[in-house]
Amino acid sequence: MGLGIVRAFWYIDAPVVLCAAANRHGDRQPRWPTPVAWQHGRMDDVPLTVIGVVRTGYAEREATPIQAALNRAGHGTVEIADAYAEGLDGLDGFDYAWLLTWLHRPDRPEEEAPLRQVPFLLRSQQRRMGIFATRGPRRVNSIGLSLIQILEVAAPVVRFAGVDLLDGTPVFDLKPYVSRFDRPDGEPRCGWFDQVAIDDGATPRRLGRPAPP
Image 1: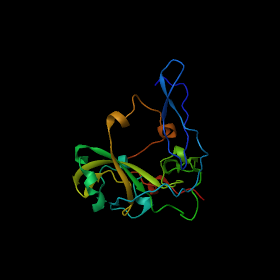
Image 2 (image 1 turned 30 degrees about the vertical axis):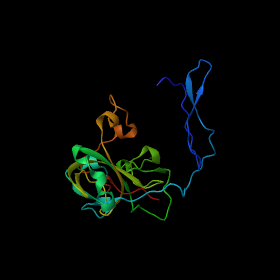
Image 3 (image 1 turned 90 degrees about the vertical axis):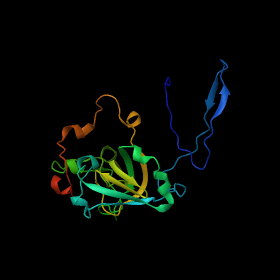
Image 4 (image 1 turned 120 degrees about the horizontal axis):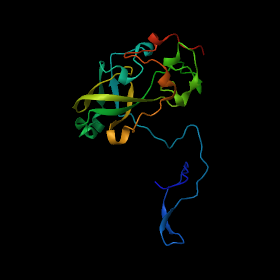
């Protein structure tokens, strides 16, 4: 993009407005607003709306496949609330979609998610990884991301293949998978995932005993 440095800021309670300003060559350049202090933790002005629910045959976390791509034989449905069903128009033209959910039944919900933990695939080694280098469900924000295969769209229901969620999981959003946007060129490195065997149908229970707290 021709930019040497990219800076990202959080803007709290302030509109982000780009103003055009001329530089010494007369070209118009965006003028960034002065960033205000950013904050972490819970924010009252970050609203999330549940738009539906996932229906599957899984009721126990340890018996649920760990990734949608490892369980294409498993089928489920997404039931969208009537108020949002119109938003499904056009989705039947896609083969895959990203399903964003709230993982509502975390392990040890009374505790904060540790920033270093043992992923399911590393249970046999009892090897810990930073939470942002894992795909496990126990996170600071229990947001699930599943790449589902769309089998049928009959509003307000989406039938899909690739189940890695418990029955009753709340849904935040559906976004179509677009190869041009979502599939990177070449063979991207996948960190420690490149070093472990990953079998179809893998569940936490099959991968060994949970790590001690």
